[in-house]
Image (tube, rainbow over all chains, first blue to last red):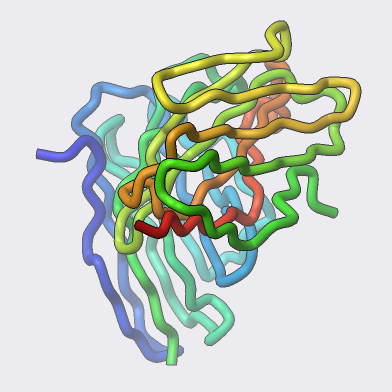
Length: 115
Length: 115
């Protein structure tokens, strides 16, 4: 069992669809993150959850809605996305103090294509 | 405005030689720096880190050098192996508190090590 597991690995969706990305960490960490990696751009931090509480929301459009039901699971709910939202979405976890990120452990990501 | 810059999108090195990957940053408040490696279809994995109180950190074939006055760090891989072929991301973090404590990533440098 890998440390951080993301499903699905690939997702193709239309602009009117609703879908969800799932992330599960088996490391006992207390913080979880969503990052977006677009072509030729740095990894962009989207959301941070610490002990199931959202502590960071980096001006992400409301068509992306995160959910963290417990410290091991993180979801990203998607609805009415745009083609420019096509990217690799990476989940990560870490063990550290809120506001002082220690090294991150990433999942393999979900490659999302919005048609 | 990018706070962490990796100006070389790609680097090609012969097996057995040294690979030097460079990273520049603009925020003088950054006090912790990390390198991640990413293979295709996998998430980034932590490689090595360095605190701003040091100027060098070594782990096997990997050495990170930090030049605070120049706001520059570099990753040296000696000797380079074909299995080192991957995208390398530089990341930086500010001191404790709020969004400063989150990791800021560069765009990455694709390293190709030729046999």
